[in-house]
Image (cartoon, rainbow, N blue to C red):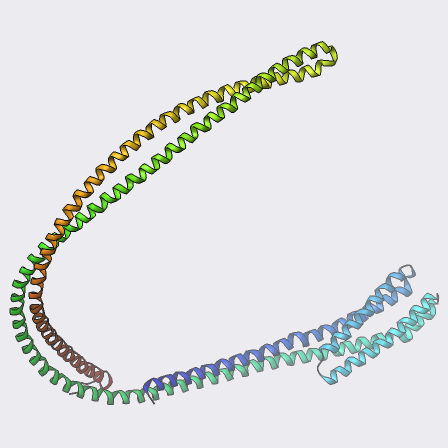
Length: 487
């Protein structure tokens, strides 16, 4: 079994003991709570029921006495007796529900039987009193009702005293159970503590023994590894020094060849940049020409739109003229209508008012058409100015397109010359680059050898450090376990 399994097993056992203690504690609390609930809900309520039974019986005597002695409040006393009878039933029902001792249930049944006899005697007294036979009712009360009532009170008193004794014994039993549960919990807790300590000590001894054996083996192995890695590290360091010297010589030769290659590459790059710039200039000129064509198309579209606007303005002017004619005719019609209304006298007043309104509307229409005609004139002037501006813009765009085409041709010829120069420089750079390939291969090979040598040196140093760390760890663990160093 591994050390981790043993530690886990020890914790599991300790947790099981804690669970046992917790279970015993919960059981003890549950039993105590159950006993206490029985003590409160059963014994004390039964004691209360015995006291209520005596109280109700005394009240019954008072109500019967009131019926016999005070005929004027007889109805009130009879109502109280009915309520008293219901209380009897509730008390006996509660006593039967709470009582759990068979012999005590028999006592409750006996009291209930006496109460039934007492109820019959009460009904007989009420019957005699209702028939105005007070003397017979009093005699029956003294002879039959009162002895039964006193017998019930005596039984209830004895029940109360017996229940009081049971309640006292219940308190003593509750205290004894609490003491017993407390003692059990203490014993189980002490057992759990003792068992946990024993398990911990045994587990510690077992783990310490295994650690001693492992530490001894670790110290011996680490000492051997440390000696071997020290020798390997020394040889690797010498090899790395020789490789470093050879690599430095190859690097100097490579730098000389690289300088020549860089100069050739610089010439090639410069030619390539000039070619790129010329191509970019040519593309820019072509884009400018295309933009000028687009501007020309837009100017033509604007001119067409302005011409359409002018034509629509003329159409609107014709419509306004028609509206003006209608307004003048409406005005003339309103004047004629006013004249006719005047001729009609009193009957034409309302028609005259309408004619006046028509005249007013005709005047407003004529004024509105005048305003629209002025605005339309301004629009026509603006459209004529816009037509002239678009014609001048078209001429300027055509001149720009022509100049851009000539510039593009010049840049194209320049781009051809630059491309030829760039191709020549590229060939020179390619030749120099081929010379560099051989040197790069030599440098790469030496670099790989140097890197491998350095990695070997680093690995041996790390192994040496790891071995030294293992040796020191073994010594520290040995001191922790045994209190002395191991050699």
